[in-house]
Length: 126
Image (spheres, rainbow, N blue to C red):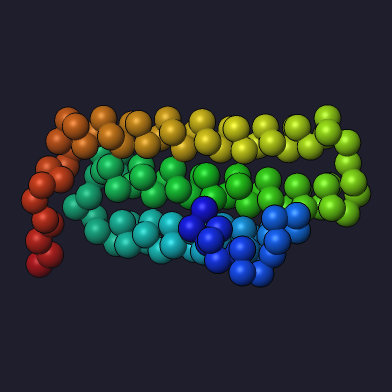
């Protein structure tokens, strides 16, 4: 998480820094949506073969699921004081987020390796 070093200025190791995590997740979701918008404005790009699309998709899915996990974890652990068994099911969301992100990033790397599109040349806009 990018904002983790900043959170040590506001919270100790024993406090919850969920607010900072939620802000960073929302920021990544907004940046992903803006990148999706920019990609959709360029009709010459085939999204299925665009590594940038798949990288942004991985970031978007991971940020959305991590946001969901952080909201549930904050509520269950600190407000309801849930048991370890219930909290472990919430951490399953984190596992699913990481696995899906890694599979999508692997697909993007395969596309880059195959040269879809040629990532060494810059796109010219007319």
